[in-house]
Length: 392
View (cartoon, rainbow, N blue to C red):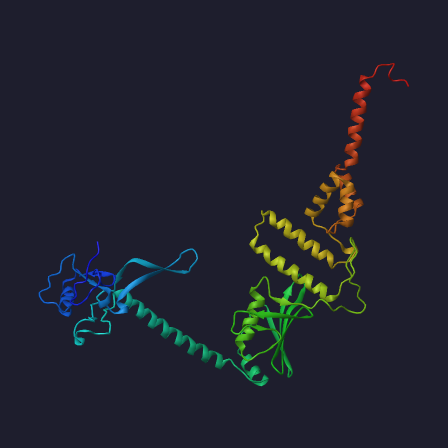
C-alpha cells in the first residue's frame, strides 16, 4: 500500500508528486509530541496510516545502508536496506512548502547509548595512541645516538640476550653468540664500527639480514642510530628459524675446486661449508616441534646426515642406523638398483661391499636366498627322478 505524506503542501506519493519513502509516527509518547509540535498542521491526530516522507528529514537522520563484518574473511560488507529507517530520536525539520522559519537544516538527532559508548571508546583509544607515541618518542630519544662515543655510553647499560657476549675497543664493538656443538664455537657475530655501520657475520662470512619488525625496515649493513635497532637485530637472529639473509656464493677461493663428483666429498669453499652448517643448524631447531615417535624425525635425521656428508672428507663418512637399515633393504631387494642409485642418484650412500658385509653378517644376502632356493628346488626335483632319469 502506498502512503501519502501528511505534511501540508507536500505532494509525496501523490498521483502528480514524487515517489518517496515514508515513516510512521514514533511509539514513544514524548518523541511523538515533538513530531506533532514541529509539523505545521493543526489538530493532527496520527494513527498507523499517518506517515511523514523522507523529504522532511535531514540527510543524516535516515539510515539507508547497513554494514557488518564477515567473520570468515574479516571484510566489511555493506548492503542497502529494503526498508530504510530513521535514527533514534530524530525529528522532521525540513518543510519546503511552508514558511521558512519552520525549517531547521541542522539534524536534531539524539545519540543512542551504543553511539555514545563507541565515541567514548574512540576517544580513549585516541588518547592511548597519543600517549604511546609520546612514550615511544621519549624512549627512542633516550636510546638514540649520533656518534660512536655516545653509543659506547649507552651500550654500558644495554642488556644482552642469553648466549651473547661483547668485545669492545676504541674502533668497534663486536657482539658474538657462543654455542656448544659440542665444543664452543662462535656462530653469529655483529660488528659496530666508528661510523656506526652495523655488519652481521655467520661464522666467518659476511651476510645480510633484513629486520622487518621495525619501521622503516632495515637490512644489514646499515648505519645505526638507536639501541632499539641493535636489540631487534638480536631478536631476529635468536627467534627466527628461517632468517631472511643474503649470502654471496658466487666467489670462491683461488685454490678451491667446486666441481662435485657423485659419491665423493665436494671440494667446496669455506663459504659453502658455512651455508651448509647454517642449514643443519636450522634443521636441528625443528626437532623441538617433532615428537620422538614421529616419522618425520627419521627424515630430518637423514637430511641432516646427508648435509653433513657434503662437507666431510670420504674417510670420515659415518652413517646413521636408519640409513644403514634402509640401504640394507634396498640392497637385499636389488643389488644392481642399489649400485645404480649410489653412483647416479642424489644421495651419498655406503659402498656396496659395506652393505654386503652387513647383509652377510645377518644372513640377509639375496645371493644366499637365491642359492638356498635353487638347492631346495633341485633336491625336490631329484627325489622325483627315476633311476633311468638319473643317467644322461
